[in-house]
Image (cartoon, rainbow, N blue to C red; front, side, top):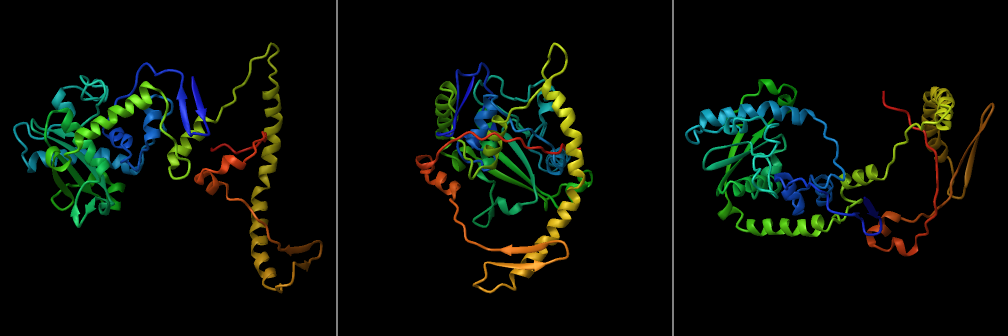
Length: 352
């Protein structure tokens, strides 16, 4: 069972789940706090199967799926990494990704994942982007650390020292028509790395991940979630604290919730029918307000515009509010906050 500790911003499980997902290249950097796309809390929720953010393909991921095989073929024909050259996982293992259970390292119970292509002595991690500026450091092309650690982890698991980050830079048109993309020396760059030379602290990263497993998996308490600076953490907590009502079976088949729903929805549809006019009215009022305000003197507290059927009144006053988000971030909100339960019923239109 899951227990949400709002005060300390952690989730506690009654016991360690029976099967934990492995630390892959993406989760590796996240656990170390070095992946700004995935937080340690999100990695923990995924690994413990507490929650996984639904994945939806975008034009960027779809383009990558089309272009990556082209890049591997380009490496094969152009750079000749060795006999058999740069083979993909299917060619290397003779099995599909599904048959491999999306893991090229079944012998390791803790770390795993899927490299993109390799030879006997070198493993390659492929990336596509149009934000080439993210790949520059001190005026030179250099993979961001969260990507570099993916290649490093797979090299370490294979007992290799060398790994390559292959960067393919795309234009907007390439995302619209990835099938026409042709890799060449101008748009595809190979960055060479060595575990020993470029990441000599890698063993300490491994040790830190193993300690993280002891701290958060063997003792199943999540890392702290960050509701201020990490939108995905906030979305996860919103999902975990949102229930979904289901119809109830009753002996006479007249579930009171369902009966009320059948009466409410038609009335709600009638209310929604005037929403467009309400929006138009609000827009006109928003245009009128500054015009009237401009006519007020500093000493005026309100101004009245007489109409045929209505008087339109703009008034002004001062109000003070407490910045609760700032108090929470400063850690003093709970000292002064008073909690009372408020139950509201909101109606939201379904997406069609």
